[in-house]
Length: 378
Image 1 (spheres, rainbow, N blue to C red):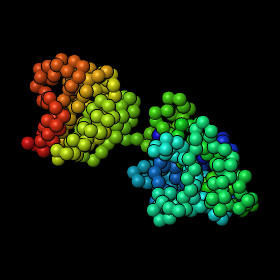
Image 2 (cartoon, one colour; image 1 turned 180 degrees about the vertical axis):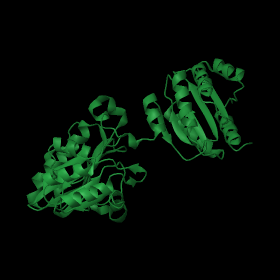
Image 3 (cartoon, rainbow, N blue to C red; image 1 turned 60 degrees about the vertical axis):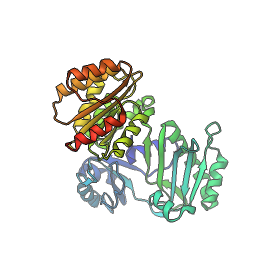
Image 4 (cartoon, rainbow, N blue to C red; image 1 turned 60 degrees about the horizontal axis):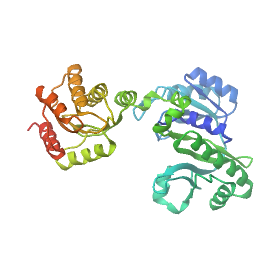
């Protein structure tokens, strides 16, 4: 789950990170009033959960309240990569002298959080990694020890920061790391962290991506979700407790278990098809969950065939079979389907499907071949 810039920066501020004065507006009149209160030049920033806002015209500088009102009116309602701008952040404009990148991510190979910093801020860190990898500094953090002052101090010197900025930088790095830990984030990023007039550091942009698996610990953060971030299918999957990712293929896949789902997608590809989704119904799925999953798959107009691959451990094959038939009663379709049910109550499940004249297969290879052939009209 992604947080908007203004939401991320408010969390940063709670952890001692300096951010510009600013407020969110949903109308040009509100933008004018905020600009009047701030005084001086302001930055009008679209709040949508995609990159490239500036290039799309979603970030503009206003010299006075009249310009703030006019520019806010232009940006509100704008379409940026398929998302509609319904709010803008009005921030004090900063006199930027230098820009720094600072972020915290999980390094899955090291199984540790890693602070990433670069003196080349203001651009995507992936681009810096391609063009000048030596400019990126990495600081792995041992969780039992945490981030110590000397870690951040050494990082400041590695970046070439002057002594006047070091103590500020230490506070900001520690605040960013604590924001990352306290929110169970998978990414916390300031880009750019800027040097401004008066030899001060300021976080003028911010980004937090939360770990969905830890959201149950943070009901206050769940309330910050922007429903524009999700498609209707992704929203329905989340509410039903399903793991779902839409892809570009034509074979819908419903599987229980992430590893089995990945293997199913691979074998569909091996037999000449392309998976339309990753969908894991999880262990212990009942018929209502299966029915919800099938409705989500069928909502994709590109799907020309559906493959069910269920290994019955905790999940019972007869429950899955009933769920398939319940969903077909609720959502009639002529999309061809094939099921492979193995494990707990597999015979009962196969009998339920056989009585409904529903195609099945005894092996995954056979099921994948059938699904691909059915999708191609064979």
